[in-house]
Image (cartoon, rainbow, N blue to C red):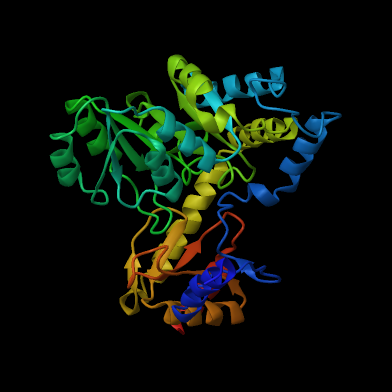
Length: 372
């Protein structure tokens, strides 16, 4: 069998299982699928601020940060974020995926132990695979299972979790986790991807909203969701940031972000800190959805969430596809989530709420869900 035939066989299997991924665009539909929770990706005032502040900056960085790609702007932006996140320093990456690869591939060493939530994002798992440390998953948000594994852990022990999990919108039990980690002298690494900007002082995520950020060894912030731009940052101690600069291959061997990206990061956070009402507004949208959905909740398997991500289970790739198509016909962009991205039997439509979704749009979406 030729290589092309092997590739086509793999694609054919996806088609049979109704889970073939395709690129698509949604024109004229009401957005209930993007991660632009605070509406900053489409915010015209923020766009103008970024454009004005960019001035005559170079189009690109010209190299890695360790060669020609470092600038005063890059270092000033990292110091600015450190102030917002109340950490000793931060290090900016091109994406949250790269930031997680960097942390988990570089930090844990042979003889150490990584314990990770079984529903951790692919980038966390990929980073862990690159590490020479021992790797063990624990049941999702199950502190008893984590405790049992901590008892057997050796070396430096790292616990990898997310503040909010993107498929269900459920939250990490951070208070319990930090207490457990302290009892076993383990280091918590939290991915704040879906809470960056959405909650916490200065948009500092779950850890800052719970006043536990100083109890966490490292925080990964992603800017392509709530902040509406691109890039990511790792927040931690000065020695940890210096360590990443020296040993994290995804940082060392990649071209630095363009100056425009650093400007966008700075201006996006400046906009958020001057508009704290955005967090209240998204909280209001979530409250409305939950109140109205409660009237029809008995018709669905619903994973309760207090986050913009709301998951409604419709088992079966074919069934969830049809549900998504019906919602699209009603004018709503709501995408299906297939297995194997989620477990077989837990396929779902994943609704994302935004500050720009009107009360009438949310009510109309509920009516369409009721008609499925």
